[in-house]
Image (cartoon, rainbow, N blue to C red):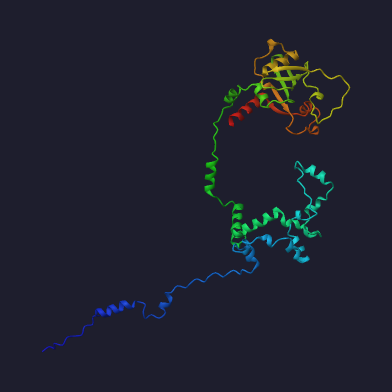
Length: 379
């Protein structure tokens, strides 16, 4: 006979499972709860507001909000000891001292005038450090507008944090990157290209340019100061079929809107008398001889007209022997440098420059006309 006593079940009841879940997997494990708690970050150390570094570098410094003229003025200066004033004087610029005399750079237009008004001044005083001179500064500099503006600028930079160590580090890194060429902002290039577009000029053939420039007349060159009063026009052409070369200089006397008036020698002589074409800054001694007679040619409106007039004056080439080629390439222009007196020692006495009053060659009228037309087109 079998026993009817029920066996005890080993299966967990629902109550035991709920208690196990509620306790959690970490309960009972020593030290597990302490590891799960995150450590709190330590706050940064507080700045000492009483240090000079904080007052002079921090953007939270009380110096930012006060009126500096109440601290830095004549009364506080007089309250300092002589040793303290002597030390602070070394930090002041030279204009604050009585020994300072204003001086301009030698190439300044008013340099000579200022030097004459000051007389004999020891210019070395401008370069001497205030520390080496036993001199008290002029206390009126405390109310000088430049000094007051410097105080305001210092406060603005201090409030912006430009004296902090972080800002100095950023500036130092930026400067090094600029020197090394490793810094680049692409948006700046795009902004520059948007505001400064590149204008592409269409290429022009030299023959096309010369043909278009043919519309410019001799009067146009004179009207636009390509040919000026005092210039020398040097004509030269080789007549190979006659084995003859004609060369004559003319002095541009009175350019106008439509024509030129020039002077030349009434013979086959090439160069003009030096006494008549010399620069005003160069004095010439009179030899006692009678002055040369010059021929005036007026109302010259084209290079061909000037060429025919010169050939008529020369007298060696008859009209039926003259070619019909353009005279633009046969006439060159000589001129003094703008705003400069010529230097006679820079050229030999028999050089082309010296013979023409130390003028310099600028090019043929053909070349100058093309340059003038190119400048008009490019603008």
